[in-house]
Image (cartoon, rainbow, N blue to C red; front, side, top):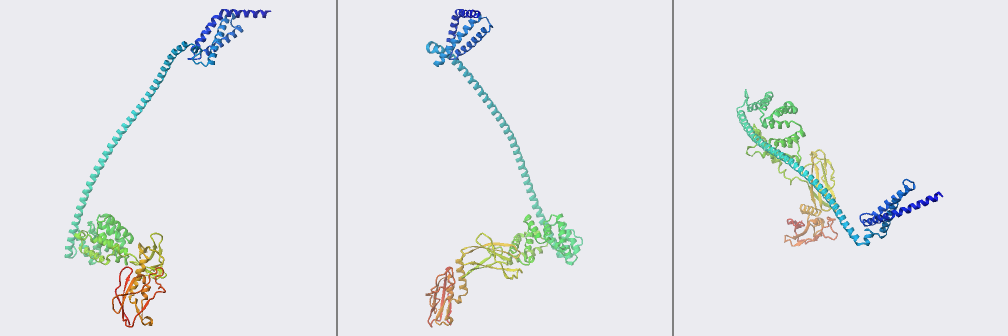
Length: 604
């Protein structure tokens, strides 16, 4: 009974609250729903109101059930929240069903749509302002970036200007350095010019001094006898010669050393002194003395004579080095020629003769205008050198002609092939040959005899080639008696020309065998067999009998290059003549166009 009474009281309370609150709560909820529908373009306010009102209604209902608040006071709020949730939820549901972005009312009432547009203008303006602000911000950022770029470029320009300034400073330094270098070079050239002029003056003074010494020496030589108290170089040299001729080698040596103390740059006193020292002390002693003099003095003649005291190859190397360093010191060329002379070597190779001729030619070229006088105190020594030079050049002949003194080949054809004979311009210890311009050389080997010139086995001067050998180049090289390789020399070989020239040479050499009267007891027959054998050199043969004009010709078969000396089986190497024929005249025209003399043959 108690529960029934309580339920009735609650029902009465709810009914009373609805009667009191329901009207105004429903009106407010309806107005809120309409407003949220109109404002829908801005945001879904109907959904927001429905959600908030629903949450509020649930909270109030829980509070009433739990008796946290008095039902009489809380019921009006519950009614309002429920009404608002219901109306807003209904509006939102209709919006979703109609898919109306601008709201349900705007779709039904045009005035509401215009109101929304008015509100939208404001919204667009606000959006435009926002966009403007955004663009302005972007512009500011771009301006900032541009400013940063300008700053960077400004820094780069400043850096570049600084580099240009530095480069300008470096360029200025370089210009100054070049200027200083140029000034230094100019000063150096001026010094070199001054030194050259001084050297020229010194050379002239030396020449004048040697000329004075030479004249003084000539006068003293004419007077004869040693000078008791010599003081000048010419006096010491005069005394050295006098003592040397009288056999007083000790005083001669002292006088030569005293002369060397003046450092006179003349060649003949030192060559004579070196001869005396080699006789007394040997070559080693002479080398030691002149080594000391060369270290103390400056005269090139002393240094040159010092070189002559060395042995063989070492002496030649030092002499060539001296000439390379002093190409205008003329006496060195005469002394170089002696290194290749027959007196020094015993027997000369062609290379030795050419080296001797080249050095002597260089020496005598300075004879003109007295260019050799300044190197000699004793002019008779110079005259002796010149006489020897001219005599040797005359004996050497045209040894310097590059077209002379080269190997030659003499080909000789047989039915078996070619026999090649090599002719050399000098004795050789070995000979080799090669076909063509490339490939290895082939040695010719040695004969079973010794060469009287070298005392060694004689090099074979010939080699064989097959008869089918085509035109080519044959290279010849050889070793001379000192073992130095000479060549190769390229010689052109044409088998056709060689065959014709070889046959022509035999025909010319043995022309008496061209014609044979009544040979072998065959009376009345004239034989011309030899001309058939060597017909490869013959173009035509004309003859006459008993001194008449050359009005007849012999029938000569063509040349067979593969078997040139075989006479064809059908060739007739003779013809008949009457007993009245007492002589025969023959002339051969060769394949090279030349003609032999008219040969006369008498019948016995």
